[in-house]
Length: 349
Image 1 (cartoon, rainbow, N blue to C red):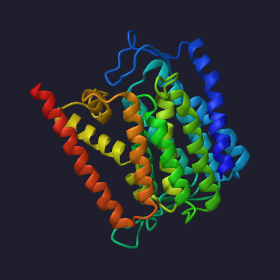
Image 2: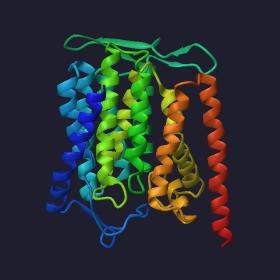
Image 3: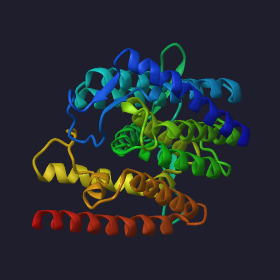
């Protein structure tokens, strides 16, 4: 596992170098003076397209270290399509509504390859089965659609794509907490798997993902030389969602480790709806924006996200269902109160 992690880290690191040069050559850059985006915090001209080295690392490492079965093939195909969508968005800024529909389509593709949530852990004990309702049909062979399991899988993957992608506002923020989350999902996946796929395969996939994002982090940390772009951000949420499903439905674990970006996303959606704005429209109002407003630097914000994810990752190794729920709700209250205090102070000033 250490070999796989280090291979992915170094491979991603070195692949990012030609990606930066390529992005500059084809003008795949973000220039705040020419391309206004209300959520951007950076200055100058920054190359985009960070999804390219991360996906290529995922692809090469998977071919070298994973058995290419039906589910792994579905993950690679769907990830490729997601990175293509990301590159198009990085270049043309496509509609957020179209992106959302494509997210659902890509999530449906990987679910069609056999990924699903057959059951989830009940925080009060036992499991909640989701594989009781199915539709069987014949089309070039016998197929089954697990209605509730497949539907929730698509919703979960689509949610994580967007939620994680929203938390990439400052240099080094996203790849750091994604690398940490994937690392702990890799450790926890050693216990069980919920699919016809070995525990070791799930664990190796997690360490490939972790290494790929940590390798990219070196170039993305302040002052960033390249941005993750939509491809790198959405792919992060997509892979974390897949890992949480494969590792015995570690949905609760993923929610706990990703508490800060998760709570930020929930609050952002509610805030936009309250202000009669589209939840899909970007704005300056995320948690990392609030931290910038109170004087935090980009390095400090990024390290804060990493440390919180690391601490919650450690906690996830020991906390059980109801304890994870209590920890998440406690952090939810603390974070919301903190955000509301910052907004109140801002209005007074």
